Length: 344
Image 1 (tube, rainbow, N blue to C red):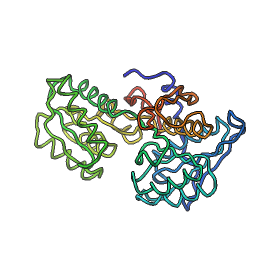
Image 2: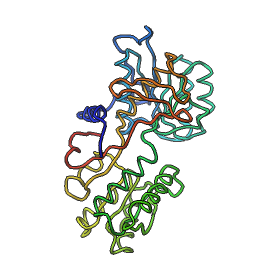
Image 3: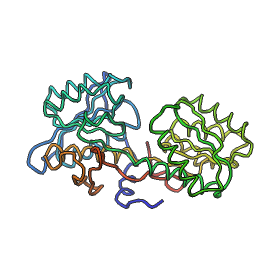
Image 4: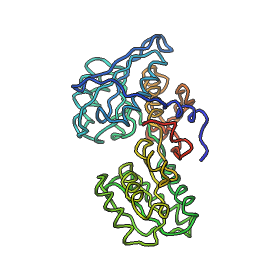
């Protein structure tokens, strides 16, 4: 798929990505830029991921730290060790009490931290969610990694290319009630029906984002459908488990596996030929964009209403969409030619 040159350049910058140094007690990592914001004041931004020690959030928060340094602000990262629904509440309360200008949060639950975020906003703190949103009334902006349409489209495109445009495929999803995955699957079904009449979706099964369950579901699919040509897994746990099963079986080279994964999880299977390509957004860019959005709110350049525009450093210009949502861009395809450039 075509990819914006600015974002491609930013993706390449993920080489040699290093995790942030975190305190053992779930405390903070702080740094301050050498300069000041465009209006002359230093903007303090605190990142609150779902949990600390998660490579995905290590990468996204690294992007946020880079952005804050670029605009001369003060960066901090805090968070719980476990990603439970209300574990983020005390960190939100503390940030508000400290007078932090902006909180950038990936929510463990859309409602459980709502009251705490409301209190923080009442205290003057701008709230930006990224990766995982809360109810819109609890935040100023949500930085979405990609549109649901874009995520569905790239997965259908990849499997269609890999199986030659015809044959039976199946979907290995996360939990049966997973909102994101179900939305993507519905859109994938519509795309298949409208544009790929020779591809038959024979089944959708659920691995519950558990490695062993996903592995077992892959085995069951291949036994139940001997003519199966491809498996699409729109979840990082599922695609890695499916690839591991196929890689060690007689199905390697006969059944294609694709979907959404991370380079470090999928590298082995791309390099050994089990997987041709998979997709994901760039978490470092996601954090970078969220930090610049937070600064724009703090500076008063935007209020979060639809149509607001702001510039996010090397990523360029962005416009706020409906319900205060800003979309990073299209998912990126990883394959044997580029996977060596990434480390997350």
